Image (cartoon, rainbow, N blue to C red; front, side, top):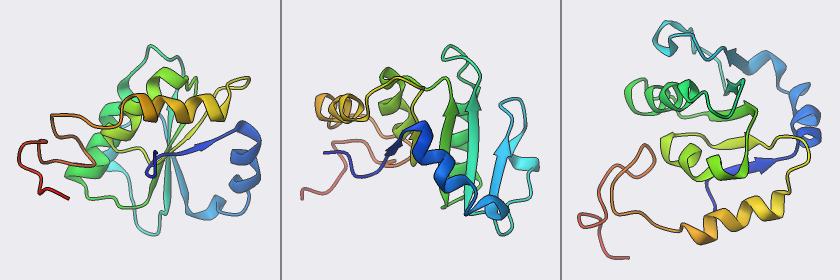
Length: 133
């Protein structure tokens, strides 16, 4: 079961937004994350204007692996269930589903794709190098 990516409905996201507004950075998908001031930021929201626009995947990976951001990286916008596994692998920790998508169905996506051979932003070591648990 997925324990890394927090899947939210639009309503849940809006309820949280007001409480943490002063510590949230909303980065447009054409911004360079390396130029952002991350001091005091606990959540970065990366926007998908269309599901076919994948620039936010690159931003998330840069934030996690190169810039060392350890807070919440949240996907917003046109977020579909099929994108969630790749989002988790590139460094996102939460995602707001597009209106009308079922959170329970989204969770099943992680049950289908539970492990990967190659490394990623979350688990950089490839499967054959990881210690047996």
